[in-house]
Length: 344
Ligand SMILES: Nc1ncnc2c1ncn2[C@@H]1O[C@H](COP(=O)(O)OP(=O)(O)OP(=O)(O)O)[C@@H](O)[C@H]1O
Ligand SMILES: [Mg+2]
Image 1: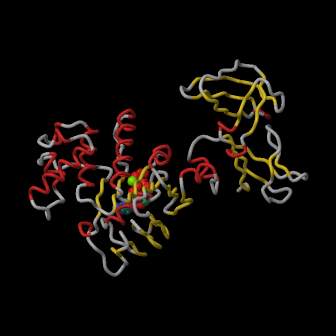
Image 2: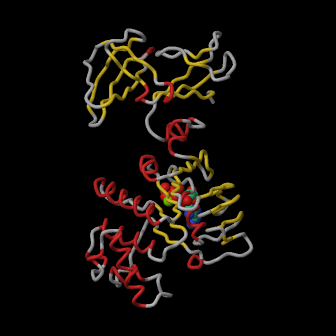
Image 3: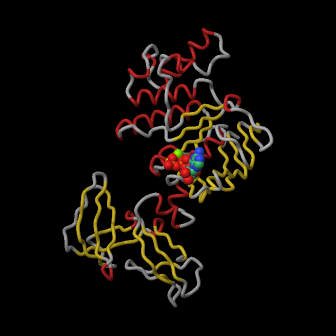
């Protein structure tokens, strides 16, 4: 096991920042901690790193107990590499010396070879003699990643490692990092607040809210089988409306009836439909809808549809599908991206 946090809770002045937290990162697995600002992601990571004193619960890394509330190993004895939000390199050290910083137990020749090896893994092998201020933000970030991996740690902890990069560079560095981590076989816990980034990187995602994990599993589980409304909406815009289980046992929607999934007649429900689940076509006259506007967004088009009682819905269709305003279209519902929860 790469990392195991068991029943970990953490207070700051009476505020419960991490609340009975249980999380495992398997050997060689990449797990993303995802959640809104202030939900306790960084605190969980700092506890795992030993940068925050453990108040309750236990933490083990690579099968070894590192903190159990009684004793605690310092960060440098935990066999970890980390990269935090402010990934600061030491400004007075060269790039090579920055990467070599944690390798003090190695002989000089071995150290030099290892520094060159990790720097080439991030494409920075020619910049060993430069100083941090001579590098762009993205290059510095890659060096910080090389530094985190240099000592071949059991576990890497990354806190928003791609923040501060522009979107083109961000996807490039993210892609390189994914392959580098996977190739090195290290276990990784990575924090992000960006659901797309989590889906891009993660073998498994732990979605957090207010110090607790709401759902943990492979990205497809969270996206396709959300356990509650918060999970479904966190991954992107959804059409939502209230309805109820009718006397025929079905839930009425403007796009046809839905199965009630075991809910009793009369139960008030919230229906969530992802825009890509409203599939439009001109040759299907069932469930007609009227187009209010169409916009090309690049890889997909967004079509605004008139709903009943002044409401309106969004449909997302692949590529360049741009029906005209006022046009009537048939709509089919993709039930795999339609979710029903009892109303609160
Ligand atoms: N040193 C501290 N002292 C007091 N409160 C703190 C401290 N660090 C964090 N907190 C509080 O604990 C909660 C969780 O903070 P944390 O930094 O873990 O959130 P986060 O999920 O990493 O957020 P973000 O996405 O904004 O980085 C917040 O309410 C925060 O204000
Ligand atoms: Mg944070």
